[in-house]
Amino acid sequence: MGVPGYRVVKGSGIFNHSFGGDSWTTPICPNCKTNSHLIFCFNLTDSRLNQIYNRSLKDLPLVSCLNCSSYWERQVFKIDPVNRKVNIVKQIDNERWVSEEEDRLPYPLPVSAMTLQQFQKVDTPSTDEPSDLAFEAFGSEYVCRILGKPLYAVDNINKNCECCNNPMEYVATICSEDFNSEGLVHENFSFNFGESFLYFYLCKVCNILETEMQST
Ligand SMILES: [Zn+2]
Ligand SMILES: [Zn+2]
Image (cartoon, rainbow, N blue to C red; front, top):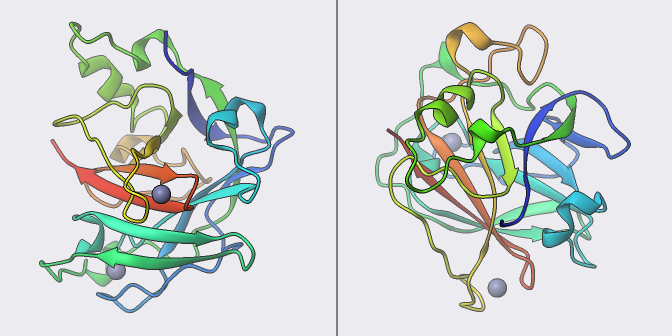
């Protein structure tokens, strides 16, 4: 039994986890020149997130531009908790693709209060069990998983921190909503950035956040 994981779903609890907004300053995307999205923000004083809590980091912002090819490759961000700002350390974008204007997600994303719900059995298939049902629920019932065992679309991901070279901790994965499941993160809002899974890793010594994308 590993670390428990949670579905991130709409609703308020005593910890103010959130979707969207602009409570952190996000970097300008080098490709499409707009603000990267603040996608989710987690309050790390929630004891369920103990594993990623550190004294300098009270909130964990998950950021990425979702309107262009910048997230297709690995991205490295440095979190500056004092100024509530996220900076780009490394971004490799060879595609330089930007989505059509009508498909773009707004900046900032609309704000919603979010809450954590312990994984259901379906969310954590064992290694010798097919993960189809888990992938079916992910995107139709919820769009963000935090902690627990990552659900990889392709291969396992192992990361070492860009700054200190120590292994990074897996934090969360996000995906788009299925077309008939709109409103999972905000009433009458469609959260769609393509058929990809975006994995977030953290080094809590350096406050380095990294992303990696997979698609099926
Ligand atoms: Zn962009
Ligand atoms: Zn580090």
